[in-house]
Length: 359
Ligand code: GLY
Image 1: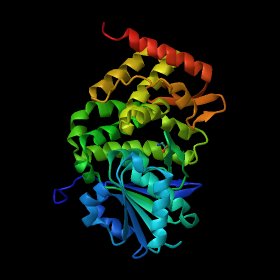
Image 2: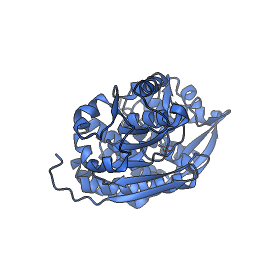
Image 3: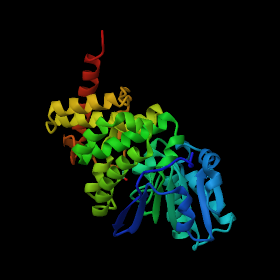
Image 4: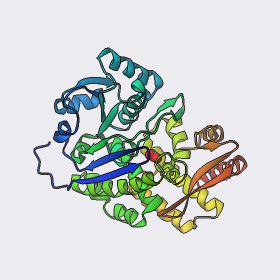
């Protein structure tokens, strides 16, 4: 696979913030990772699938494997990784390399930020979802039961290496999931990117590394600009959560991939934006049609307890909720809505879905 000619250009994106500096190496070459890390004291956190696929390319270091998937994003698994680090001799001078997708990066980042009160860390990001979002920007986290990312820290990885050729081994569903986060960046901040993605869907789904690499780099630059301004999510960074308020609920309830849930969550948030009077209906339709063309539009019903799940989300602030809405495709903003507004919208949404059911 890596013998093929690779024309994607490499580009470094720097995220320098008050809580740390990070270098995102877009279109980097997996084989160079050994040059970026210390010669000894390296501990590689990965999952069993990534190890099987890429273990032969791992740099020298102790390898700690987890089970793949969201079920590993727990405090128990994080605690177990810390115990294994201790048993295998990791100390404060050690270096943790998270080698995997979103779950591995969230876990490895959390472990690196708490083990012995923090050790150096970096990522080799192996999925579309993690190259475009999860491994970038310093959020770490695990879930608490059905509540996503309730326990976590902000800590910038020293570098994130994104070799886009690794995306060729991703299962189709995982690739689609990453597309959701790619499109999200366009929808919140860059209308041109949105139209460019819509016009290049065939090539994107062919996984041409150069094409997808360019789109990932454009999305990550959007994210990097937001994170530089607000690394700890006190304000503007909240727009990166567009689609996540309802998306997290659908993801947990139906056990569907993150980006697929976020895609439907974006449409629900866009519908809320219309309902509140901020987004013209024509913009909502344009988004709906474009997402349908990606093949990613899903129509899961809102779970019965959606209001209580949403209101327990960590973005909830005593009795009201910060939601990310749209003024147009390419312009997101944060608005506080009351629980009463949320309940009325959920009723409206359910009724409108029932009306649009074929009889
Ligand atoms: N995934 C959203 C963020 O990093 O803020």
